[in-house]
Length: 468
Image 1: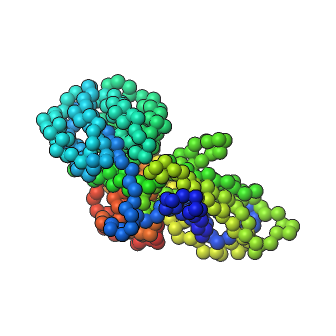
Image 2: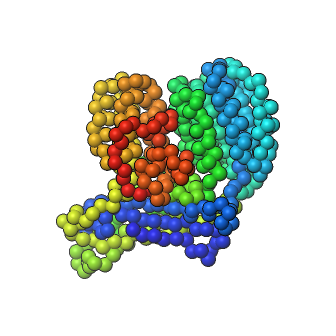
């Protein structure tokens, strides 16, 4: 395991820590592969009343709520209660606006100071559901309200919908390009889907392009935990626009595993990781493909540099914080290498990213109507991940959903893929602890068995695994 930190002399900020954890404590001398974790860790936030409070970016939020006809009754009323709850969690340093849309767009609450929930409550009194769904127009109005934020603030559109975009622009790829454009201008997008009829590919695509999160709730009562999780995350963010560069040594090819977003900057490809919150870690699983080591003069006891890693992100005041390190390991005979113990955390996280590929295959089977084959594949997948409490419980719940609600299971799989490929991890808590509703684990670090609800895990979970 390699720990490296940024030079504290370069900044008054607390520094990120880079941890490189290989699957084994050596690499094979011959041609082969070696998995490792690249982990960027945030410092723990100081306890309340001890030391200076961590600096939080003022939030600028546009809460964009679908009020189309399908939202009539409890869904719309719960959505408005969520808006009021968000407003109660803000302070006068923050700003908030509320946008409502059906086939028309309204702005009952223009962008103004937070901390006044009564102002929001009065403005939303008597709101009723209406016509069709001009989703893009509602989202775009929210983005425009946030244009021109001051440096050091965090601007985010929170979009809620329970249906399909059927008025105005409805092409998912085109909408995604608009989200990416606004993200480049400092306005991110988080999406929240409700029920059985929203367009999950559109909502996930908007969040991915907009640099935000994506959630969904199976029922109206599932909305509040999603809004609360997003607010907790935004209030805890410490490092944004986190990028990792992988610089392999001679004879080494570095392959990021899973659904990794990438960008090319200055001719260098970088992997994009989620924004990092206090006390958490963002991580990347990497597979190193190694050419055979030249035999002449090689000393197996001498560590060889296999990979250099540079990670950088922006602090609340816009300052770029950087940490870097090198993975150097001895290369030993394959027979000796195979006898080395495997790091349990690396094995666990690699399971998570390979789980994504398998789950996408099951999702395609359900969409094609091959439910029997989907169940069989889920049963086999559950056996493969039996030692991973979270993934095994997910497989068991998905098998139930395929039987109970095949179309709903497709949404659940889509959001499970998102969660598995776009999540922060707790630095010290076990999988089992993160699956429980413990107050010690922030909502954005909890692992749900079902992404669309907060139901308890099924009885008979797999045993707890090691620290995360």
